[in-house]
Every structure is written in C-alpha cells, then in structure tokens.
Length: 329
Image (cartoon, rainbow, N blue to C red):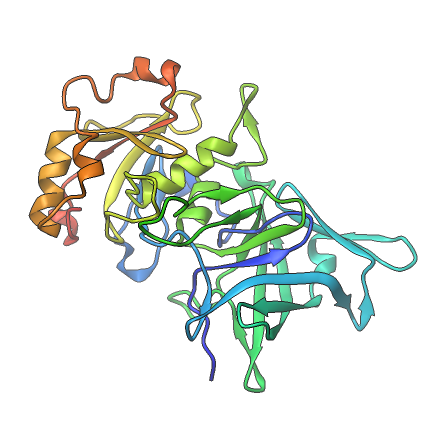
C-alpha cells in the first residue's frame, strides 16, 4: 500500500492550505509531554516540531492538486477558491458552497512523476474561540483500493485534519530557498496538525489576518522558522520534537509570561541573533554548528524588546526539559 507521511501537500487552486487541528482555542491548551502527539500552546508556550510540512509518497512528492476537476456527488464544481482559511465552491447553477457543504468533494492530487492521486474531503469542522475563522478538513487519498487519511491518525485513532493556507512552501533543507513561502493565486497547501505551519496558525499567527492594523503574513512565516529553529533561513531545523519554548511578539498575539533562557530574535527569513548559551547547547548535542549560526551569536543585547521596533518580529526563550523526561534542545 502506498503511504503518505503526516506532513503537507501542495494543491493548485485560488489559494493554499496548511495545518492540522481540532479547532481548539490555543489559550485553553496546557504544556504536556508531546511524545503522544499532543499540540500545546498556552500564553506563548509551545512544543516545537521539526516538520515544516510536506507530503511524500514513497519518495514521490505530492506537488499539486488540480481543482479544475473538483466534483461533489458526481457533479463538477465550476470553481473553487480560498477565502481566508475557508474553501468555497460554485455549482453549475451558480450556487455557492462552503463549510460542511463541501464534505464529500473529490479531486485529484498531482504527483511529481506526473501521475494522479484520487482525494476527497470526508468532513469539515469550524474552529472555536480565537480560531473561529479557521476551518479544518479531514482529507483522504485512495491507495490500492482503500481510502487512507492524508494526515494520519491521532493517538486515539481519529484522523488528523488539515487547514488551508494560501501559497506554497519550499521543503528543501540547506538551500537558499529552503523553508521559504511563495505567494500564489492558483495554488494552496494542505498541511497537517503538529507541523510548524499548523501550529503557527493555531497560536494566532494567521497569515490572512492582521493585528492592530499589521498583517500577520510575515509573523506566520517567522513562526515557522522559530518552531523549527531554522536559524539560517535555509530550511534546516536545529531542534527536536518536544522541546518546550516560550515565544512572543510585539503585537500582543503571544505574550512573554516566562522567565526562561533567551534564545533568538526572528524575522521571516530566519534568526537575527542567537545567544551564546544556545549555541553551546547546539554544539553539545550536534557536535558541530554551521558557520552561519556562529555569525549570528550575540549574547549581550539579543532579546531587547526595543528590537521589535527595528525589524524583529518574534522572540523566544527555552527551558530545561529534564523534569518532563524530554531532550533539552
């Protein structure tokens, strides 16, 4: 049976999709051991995830899903678009469909080798609380005669949902474009919860939204770099799943409520500065640290909140996880 790992997928359409989740308000989540796959986020505290997103099928990338042939109950839809995080379709007679009305819609994913992959939306749910504007889609793909959940199952055996984000991401590592986002009006990304794209949305960094008149587009991208410790902005992660961090910004989306060891300042292209203690940690675990990280070492002054007014989008701290039985990375 062909298998798709629980990460991401790209699709042609009027926007992009990413993130997987239950729609639970992040402010109600607690910090827990993430070895059971639980997403946590509370007052700026989050569990890291190495994965940005990206769906592969036995080494073949799922690099697009054509929505020109989307159908519902065997009837083709004239058009499908993405409004914020909500997919919407139009029937032949001009009727607009969105939300739960798209349950059962089928379409074809396009693999990098040119072959197609049948897919369908099994169910749709709306987020709650601060995520009321987020829509979650349980998506399946057909493989060897059976339907499999695109994002896999959670610890309870329930399929993990996907949320929609406009544009596409580069999933390569150690490349000039690794981890970067590309805007598109015809492509969107299907992402799965527990990946960086999804976590950042659920923590409030919604790229289609704004805070105090400021677009959150770059904040979301900076968050994806931060959660994966992509210091160099080249797609290479320097963290492990399960590391607890405290992240915050100058807009008030996430606030600083902890007094942990400061790590880095972030923009959408990577870290602006990294503290010496963090680099020592990296060298201890990985044995070697890339030169680009060493060039960002700035112990004194790194973390000054005045830097939010000079280009820094996010900052983060980290704490020792020994009490949780996790690796401190």
